[in-house]
Amino acid sequence: MICQVRQGLAWTFVIQLIFLGSKTTGYNVVKHQLLKTRTLVTVVFLLFPLLAVSGIYRWVDADGQLHFSDQKPNVPSVEEITVENPNVIASPRGKSGPGSRQGSAGAAAAPLRYKTLAIVSPGDDEAIRANNGQVSISCTLEPALGTKAGHQINIVIDGRRITGLTSCGTTVNQLSRGTHTVYVEVVDTMGKTLITSATHRFHVLRTSRL
Image (cartoon, rainbow, N blue to C red; front, top):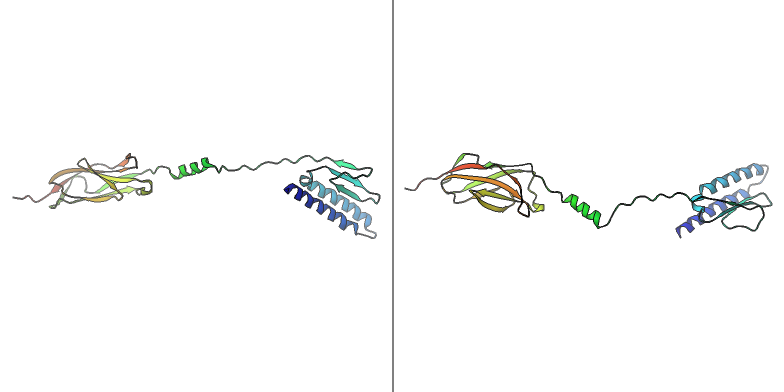
């Protein structure tokens, strides 16, 4: 349907050129006739991609007028113009199916790689006065914790895990007097360890009860 519309528009343009040219009179008729003929030939060849839908015929009538038509006329000395089909190169189409969406999702879900995880407090081999047995544990993590990916922080003190943390710090209660160990780790939703800090030893000092 689109090809037929384009073909009709092309022929309308050619006919308008012929009609406008036929109105010229006076001493300039011959010169204008030659110019019009050249113009028509040029236009037809430029419109070949649109006119190539069917055969094209060319003939000159008794008045010397040059005509073109996609239907063979019943006149002598008609000439059929052979037009080769233009090469059409289809533009590549991007994949928009489920596979491409999965690929985009896979790229967006690339695993987060942590660079550093370190304990800030308590310092390694630090002595802490804590008569109530409370010790604050804090750490630094780079880049920030991927909470959207379900990552969590575990603090492991004396082999006992405090799990499910989403910030790099907590307070541990009821620590006895003496030496303790602590390290921090980041785990994913499957419990796989993604990064671990160095282990710190610290010493809790409490007033003895006599």
